[in-house]
Image (cartoon, rainbow, N blue to C red; front, side, top):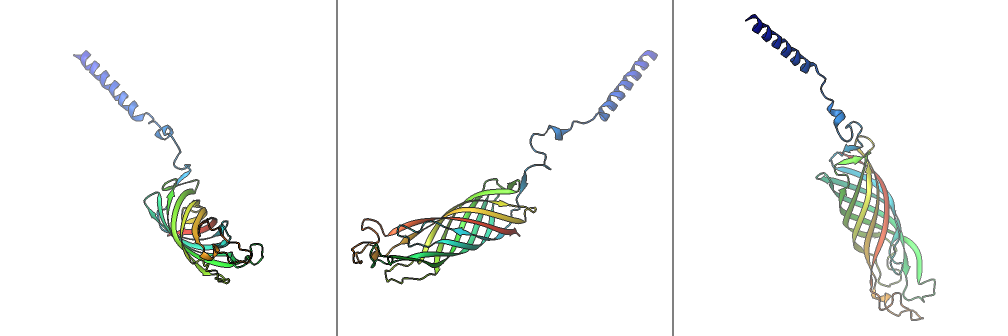
Length: 247
């Protein structure tokens, strides 16, 4: 009987010691077993999914069309409002003032005469646009940068130009615009301030008057060959930088 009691007592002691050892054992360090970046040192940060208002400035250049009648070479300033839609899409509304120039074409002057093309003369435009942007890194930034691509549709208006001084019938008027853009936003201060750099291709279609097909000059030359159309798509690289605020 005493022997049985002693065996039970030894078993109880060994069991107690085993439980104590389990309770005092060091737990595994799960953080060291994680794969990827420590959240404190990750290059990815959440974007504030809030509306934003930005002011930007830049330069629009290049294509004046086949007879150099279109406006270009414009310094630009604009205002942009953007509104998030989900984690990766942005609706964008913007308006800009384009301070450019254009040449005046006189179809009644000889093709070799300096009067055939004169200028450039000041030609200022206003452009309004609705755009859709896609954030390439979703609702996060990479090292505080958020690259994106986008497309836009808008209208451009002639607000100040020399007009039809040669009675050719040519006016820039109002045009539908198309745009493709790529850029990046930089969030230097916890996502509230936005520094934006963008490169876009802006396009609109010029429409020339029938006088550009006619033989009105003394040498019988035409401004545009009779076989060429009186419409002309022009493509304009537009670089800009801006600063904005999430609110």
